[in-house]
Length: 218
Image (tube, rainbow, N blue to C red; front, side, top):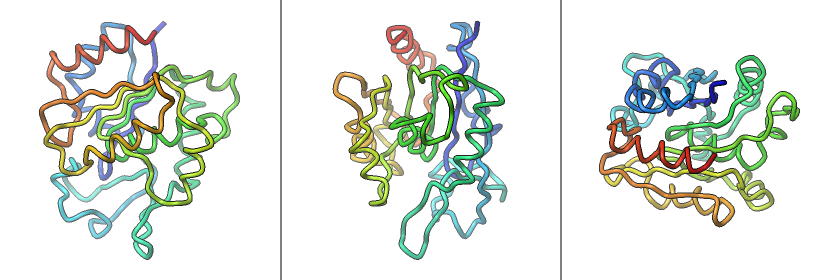
């Protein structure tokens, strides 16, 4: 039986775009029995909602931009809205259950937050979704707004995790990645760097490191 992995794309991307950007990643892991699922986030953004450095964040070309988080320009913050939680619950019920979750940038931030209490935050039963076994965060971060801090404090992340940071990443800084990394229970999280910027590395040599981590985590 295949091991299903939910793939959450970054800001201004889509499921198909993220799938196209992770071909090398899948090429190494699919023969090991992993099957990848790429939903597209339910929130549509206009170009005005995006940072000025659209190319830097790895956005898809064109003007069909998607997001998991809702911008809150008035307060300079963002929210994880009910529409995203409802969408992910329905996606898990229809396509899961999942063994693991992998997110990039905003998708990794959402993944990390959900890992504090996945089933309760999404309203899933254990039958619908047994305990997630692992998650991988590429350029991930801990949510910044104050309203989310109590969740991280009361529910330290215990799911085994891999946190990947690009040495040249100027979008998600190392301190942000470490913020999510240190939100995990000691001994459950692994930190790994690659030599590039704000993207999911596809080189066979690097993905083999991820494969080793996955196999050692089973």
